[in-house]
Image (cartoon, rainbow over all chains, first blue to last red; front, side):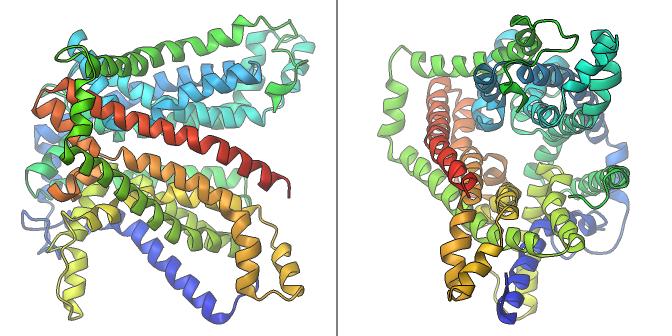
Amino acid sequence: MEMKPLTRVLLGLVCLLVAIWLVAPTLVVVPMSFNANKSLAFPPQGFSWQWYQNFATSPDWSTSFLNSLKVASIVAVLATVLGTLAAFGLDRMKARPANLLRMLMLTPMVVPGVVLAIGIYAVYLDTKLVGTLLGFVLAHTILALPFVLIAVSANLEVFDRRLETAAASLGAGALTTFRTVTLPLILPGILSGLLFAFATSFDEIVVSLFITNPYLKTLPVQIFASITRDADPTVAAVGTILLFATTILIGGGMLLLGRERKGRL
Amino acid sequence: MSASEPTSQPAGGRPAGAWKPFALTLPALVLLAAVIGYPLLTIVLRSLSEPEWGVQNYAWFFGAPVNLTVLQRTFTISAWVTLVCIVSAYPYAYLMTAVGPRVRLVLVLCVLIPFWVSGVVRTLSWVILLQDSGVINSLLRSVGFSGVRLIRTQTGVVIGMAQVLLPFMILPLYSVMKGIDLRLMRAAESLGARPSRAFFTVYLPLSLPGVYAGAIIVFILALGFYITPALLGGPRSTMLSTLVQSQVLSLLQWGRGGAMGVVLLAATFLLLALAAPVMRSRHREAGRR
């Protein structure tokens, strides 16, 4: 589209503002985390590592961090297995029931968090699952499932099933076909589903706030408690660590992927 | 789509047992029924049975002006968030289609970076940015303006929520705009249309499916927001989710909290149901090009 120079400048300016708006909240925690005072007022004063030390040494923070890692790892595996199986099932079903079931399995994405949370909380109170590892894993798995389903389904849609027939016609059994043909081709979908599932669980807050108790807290619950209680820059330090870790993970992943499919996007 | 080929058979070439694909989905369905279906059913039942059977909790909800104010506010805030998202995502998504691959990568990164940091941490960031001693007010004061009150106001809640939801508007918009044939614009201009007229009569209508898709996702997600309004908002910007939480956790009123939850849930599904046919027909129109 041909644009007048003025339109062009205006468009660029608006988009710059939107980009800042998108990114600023991610970056603002970094300077705050080195604050010398126990305050979240801007600009931060002085420089210190004390909030990072606090994160590493205070049991509240380190335990909740380890809890989150534990829950998210189990959830990632469980949701990926269940989601991949379901994606295969839906792919091999007739279109009408498949669409219906798919919609059903995507409901966790649209049910308002608090409504789901009070429901799960009610059931967990009856079944004594509040504040248990199993309780967290079950709730987070169901929330992570749609992401795995979407990622694997997208991959299955472009997967050419004649390849399986070819393998079978060459004498491969169902399992060998799956292991040597199907799995390698849909692995990118499964891996991104795994990553999404981990991230969903690691980040989940609304349901976690309801099913937590003093014995089992996840990191987001601890962060939420800290924000509502006082202005503790430890939260900023945690945010910075998470930002750093994700950047390394995603940066590494993009480098790997970028080598595979250069020029696309 | 492979699912529509009636002749296709599973690996091994054996005829497909109809139960086999269903069996694969069964574990997920069982978990879904146990962790979503049963809890939601519990909430519906409690809303109708506590303290006694009947619709008293719904009568209470729709009878109290306070609740109706919050219900209305929930919709108003969601509408504002959707509007802000459309207005800011539209030029951004357009720019994504108009630039070279290098700049596009930067623009895509800016959309994805918000997902890199935990959602709760991001809300803390908004507290840091919006508070009276925060970044925005410091900047305003340093250039001579007086500070504005943003934290614990509806404006603050809208700014924070729209930032969280913006990617859900940008991405569908971009995927639709990417498919628009720009030669249509040139054709319109060669037939004498001014650029603005060509935009409003050609480009805008073609991009509307993306606007609809994004708006519906954003509005529905906004209705159920809990954390952002709870941390950025004040008593005058309470949304329905906060009310549900306080009924259940603070007042132990499972019936009333449940009724509110059911209202919120019903609103969500009603919107989805209303949106589905519109989206489908828009989709078809866009496909007819």
